[in-house]
Length: 110
Length: 117
Image (spheres, helix red, strand yellow):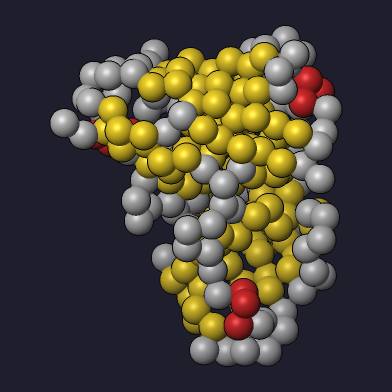
């Protein structure tokens, strides 16, 4: 069974930078998994941030960037703002129409 | 502006059925694959199902395969999720989402499904 791994929580200071990662329980994440990233605040719908590894969705500020770092997908936030305090989910496309989300990272800005 | 509005959630008994709808507007619905995802209380997101735009091919997570059926009516710009043999673990907020080629693009606000006796 494929499991997508994310850090359960992360803290960053306002104005700082943070990199969240998205890995696979077995194997490496590559661009062929078309990693995407989503931001969600409690009680709200998810918001699409990044797709196809590093393409920002419309209206997403360039403080958010996606990449592959080593064997994981990564979401980097620079100049972090208090509004960025949210849950962040990655998703991988496994082929045959199947997608899978990671468990999410709760980002605290303090 | 893209707008997705889910409806049909509510309380269902274990073993029961429920049909969710997702009304779409602001884009050419028939040209896009659509997905359902869900989020159990206090938990993360889980992909549930995807239906393609053209051929209507369908895909399901193992957790719902054989119990849920996704469909669409392009004449009504509406996506559906027929849920049967419901279990307590199906309790969640269900979101519909339009699809980019390999990702979830625009999201609805969700509808809550509670399975309990």
